Length: 102
Ligand SMILES: [Zn+2]
Image (cartoon, rainbow, N blue to C red; front, side, top):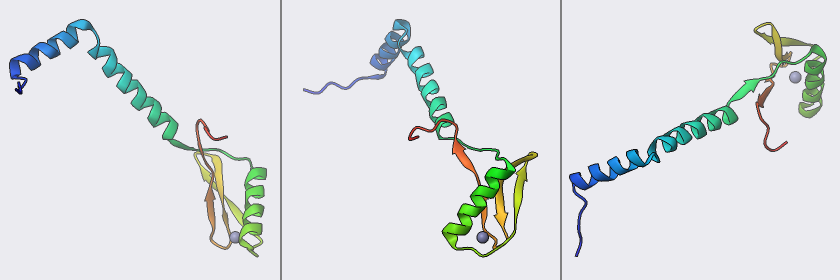
């Protein structure tokens, strides 16, 4: 025979969870995990030096067999974050804060 949990039982279960001190740490743990997940998955733009940007441009030229002979830096907040090739190709260097698969 089935017995359904009624509202009073639910209140008692919740009350027991609160008073046992299990529920609050569980909520904080969930929040902590959500924050950690957000930080791990967030992508940040990595500043480059002119030399690094130039190297990336040369790699692009090789890979795309691009014949352009000029490029310019893409600057954001006074930092070089990538390059734009004369062919129209744009590259912005993005990286995870923490790289798991290094
Ligand atoms: Zn190009």
